Image 1 (spheres, rainbow, N blue to C red):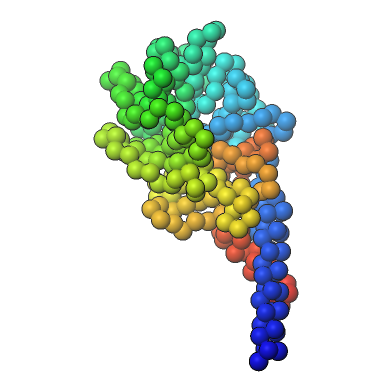
Image 2 (cartoon, rainbow, N blue to C red; image 1 turned 135 degrees about the vertical axis):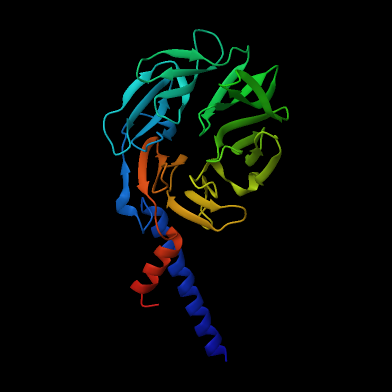
Length: 311
């Protein structure tokens, strides 16, 4: 009996060691096992933030410092299109970019730039800061974060009505980042952070303004963006075992979760292509585009390791 118990203990320890090896393989490898060859770094040496796909999937816009660039989604030289702003977002027809622009010593305001003619239209003129714009899919609205008299809220500007409507009010001391319209334009997901706490993930309904917390700070999720279907989110989260960053697809309302790409170093700003076949992510400051994996990275790698050792 003692011999059998010891044998089972050794087998369990061996399996645990193999699983830890599998996890290390998954994390040390730069890409998921199922799609490693389909990840391509398309920028080099230009710190990338806030990348967003064009509506036809042919290009990606991003900012680096206060410069805004576009570049082909399959790779190629970036083109600088503005020198005074951040957080670009495409119009649904792909001919314009809205972004947070700073002029002189004034705070950021939301502006719209014509990519073909270069014309500019100022959308906000408040004394406070207006940032993180996102263009609705119907082309009529832009949601943005606004800081006015030390109060932070999400506002929606309507082109057809010419009005700014407050959608949410956030408690003092909180920061709201990266609002993103769902494909049906009836929900907006965003990241909210409180001082000395990690981020929460919220969804607010449009136009009612009703809010729902999807994930609290303990979840570790950041940078939420909708899948084109509106049924799931892509985010950055912690690996379930190794505590390293992963690009995570999370089916709403309660899972399942799929880890699409894991790294030992930083990942940020994941974003689906418009057809959902690819995603982009900032990896070590550079922009990488990946074809979607068909199986979770940890399960696929663990299966390969088990087969390798005859388990």
